Image (tube, rainbow, N blue to C red):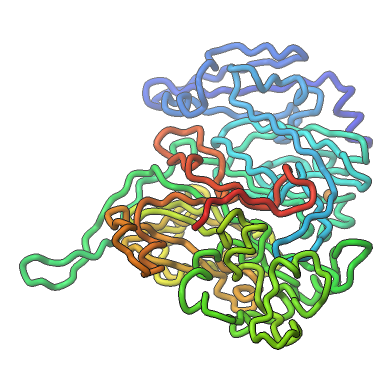
Length: 514
Ligand SMILES: [Cu+2]
């Protein structure tokens, strides 16, 4: 049977079944709402799903045959701009382009909307999500939404060049879900997903995130011993979205760019591991403080030479700007590893005037929430050097509290809630060393607003942590939640950072100096 035609031509009726619990759930009434082409909705739906839930409503969408499937004709008839349903309309354009990583490598990027990661989508549990993919490229693309419960056929099926397709689903379960290209009926799935066509869907629990309680270290004023006490934080947090994956790139250029290397994928031997697309993308601060910022520093002490910018290769796009003859022998071949992130001054070309990369930035005592998604092909045992993970959740299921490391498997996710009590510099790492030293390392600077930067003198670490947090990379900040008391707005402190749609062939940044 031709599913798509069958569904389109059949005069389908979508049933909204609204169970209204009356009197705190003591009894219930069944109301059936019929949707036809013009989407007539009866009943009192002029409120958010969150409000409905608070009043004891529950909303389900089902198709007449029992599948949780909204036929295309009805999907297109739903007016997302209507206030009568909580509906998020998302249009994603599949594009293939060349981007230059800050490591100096031009790569083929398969993308949604020309950026990596693809746009982060955020809804609330129970919302309707309407996805349209517009294929603006020469290859066949598609979208598989892990946040949906839909028949993969035809919804995740191929969209030919120049064509578009829409499907709709209900975000029934909260969590951090991947969406990715499935190429042509999974032929090419690995290439398209690993070469950039992945993004994050955050589905907030309709009742919000639970408040956070941690074990805080205190000094017992009676006996002067250290003690712990339970300290409670409300659910409002500074939020970050981090996608972990790998670039598997051909060693040689294909035309003017490196393309996907399937053999490296099968051997689990990535060229780079990356966070939000950029290997070592948030290490700027670490590399500005001693001992990592010494004269003639060689990152080869910790990072394999072959994965950093190779200054021994002449005429690479960034060679002139970024390679130094550190031993003054007139020969860069002995200085292969003055890496892209380590040259203050000239690196301004890449990272903004005077800056040398960026990092994540919070204050001591902030409630911080990380949405972490692994869209790579290897494990991500997620760990913060010097800090414990106060709480791990998957969706609204609390999995663990006060632990050292949590493994995020491929195409899995976790929500980490953390309070950094001590100001300083922390590394957020994939504790698999081969991934860590290929790029899965980021820096979190925890500020002390009570410290005056003017009092720091020449103490670089003091300069880094004194004063308020103010410098977060834009590609780590998810959209704000629709729920109250959930997201702390950090957009005033962001710096433009990442593989963006704005600049056609480059990694972009407008970060302020560190
Ligand atoms: Cu694709």
